[in-house]
Each structure stands twice: as C-alpha cells, then as structure tokens.
Length: 225
Image (cartoon, rainbow, N blue to C red):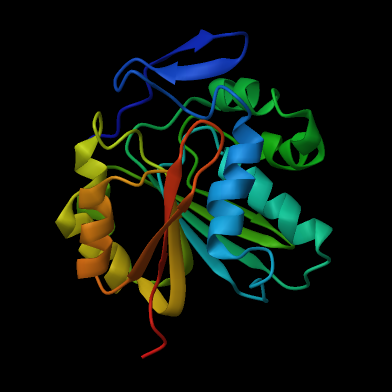
C-alpha cells in the first residue's frame, strides 16, 4: 500500500480538520487539555512512567499526544528513555504538523526540540530521552507484524462513526495482543462496539467521564496474567 498524506483544511485559526473524515484532529475546546484528560490520565500517566516505558498510538495526527507525553515525562523528572510508536495511515506534511503544534504555546519547548526532525516522510526520532517511531500505512496491515508490546495505548483515530476501520474487532484484537501484561488503553470514545471489542481482546473495560462536552470516554486495563 502506498502511503497517502492527510487531506485537511484549517478552521478557527489553526485547528486542522480532516476533509477525508470530516473530523477535527483535536478538541475545538482545548486539544491539549483533552489529551491530558483522555490519554495521560486515562492511562494513569505520568504515575506509571519508568525507563523504557512504551506508549503506542493509533492515529498520530498532529503529534499533539507525543508532545504532551514527552512534556509530562520531562516535567516529572523521569530518567531513562520513553519509547513511543504511532501508527498513521495519512501523515501530515512537516509544515502542517509544525503549524498545528504551534497552537499550543505550553508545548513550545518540546515542539522546538522535535521541529528539526520532521520531514514529509518521518519514520524515527532519537533524542536522549525519546525513541519515537512512526509506522505509516493501514494499521490493519502494519500492527499485526509489529514485534513489540506497549505499556499504554492511545486509541486516537477519527470518530468511529466516520473512521470505523480503525476501531474494528480484528484491530482491537491486535491491540490486545500487543499490550504487555498490566498494560492499558484509553480513548475519547465510549461507543459500545469499541468497548465490546476491547473486552473481547482481553481488557477490563470501564466507561468514565469524558472531556468537555463528551459525557463519557473509555479506559481499559489488561490483567497481569
């Protein structure tokens, strides 16, 4: 499969919206606050961080989740290396990512560190405290052949109603298979079929309060054994 780039337009200043899926890349209210609530707190981070902790993500988008996670890692004084792998079918161009990330002034220092590494075909970034890998292509094809396991999953595809391919039972089974014992997953959606698919993949699934106008979100935990 040949990788395709994102198709987007900009609304309300610097909010990128996918024209392919008719969905914004982050909350129109406060994208950074949503990331912290859903993906960091939803995976009990930064409290679980340790050297070698591995975050995996479905839907890289603007890179906002990566920046927020690396900021939390550094602000917590964590030693060692954070591993972060993201699966993205339609990557943004480097200029689009930089423009989107510039909207979050709290992340300026992190964005500056990563900005020189972005290209229109990014694959990896290595810093003293970060090993980042971007896997491009359809996650239904790329995740099954991935050889690692994550300690925490950020399930951040576009809305399940508009992008059902990234939320199907088979893909959630792969998420479960690629989660370390005691690992976790979190997502902004509380769609019933997503929660059922995660449960069938071996997770203990709960519905909890969402961010902003979203009443509920999903947290999932994989038992230690």
